Length: 235
Image (cartoon, rainbow, N blue to C red; front, top):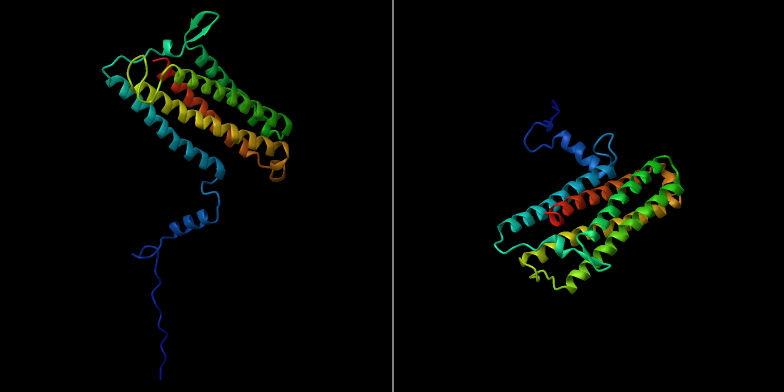
C-alpha cells in the first residue's frame, strides 16, 4: 500500500487571514520594549509624542479663548488694569507678569546648561543647575499663586468679574491653571532627576538622556508660557 505524504499549504503573509511579517516584527519590537525608531532613544520618542499631544490641548485652549473673546458683546477687561500692581503708591501694569516671564525664560537657560554638563558627565554641576531650574520654576508657581489670590480677593470668579465680560475669569483660571499644573509637575521631575544625578544613578548606565528628556519637557512649558503671555496678557 503506497503511503503519500499530505502537505498543508502554508499561510503566507499575502494571504487573507495571515499576519504580515512586518506587523509581527512591529508587535515583537513593542512587546520587547525595544527602540522602535532606529537611532532614536525610546524615552525621547515618547516625550515628543507626549509634547505633541499636549500642544493640541494648549492650542485648543488658546483658540477657544480667542474665539470667545472676539465674539463677546460685553467689553473685555483691560489686562493692563487687571494685572497691575501698586508699588510705592504707583500702579504699574503687568509688572508681576513681566517678572514671572523673566523667571521662567531664565530657567530655560539654566536647564540648557544642565543638559550640556550632563552629557559631560559632570554630576555636581548638572544637579546644581537642575535644582536652580526647579527653584526658578517654584518661584514662578509661587508668584502665580499670589496672582490668583489677588484676583480672587478682587472678585474674579469663573462665572464673573467686576470689570467686564464674565468669560474672563473662566479663561484665566483654565489656561493659567493648566499651565501652572505643568510647571509644578516639571519642578517635581527636575528635583527627582537631579537627586538621581547627584547619587550617580546615571553613571552606572552611562546614559544621561533623562536629563535631556526633562529639559525637553521644561522648554516646552516655557514656550507655552510665551504664547499665553502674548495672547492673554498683551492682547
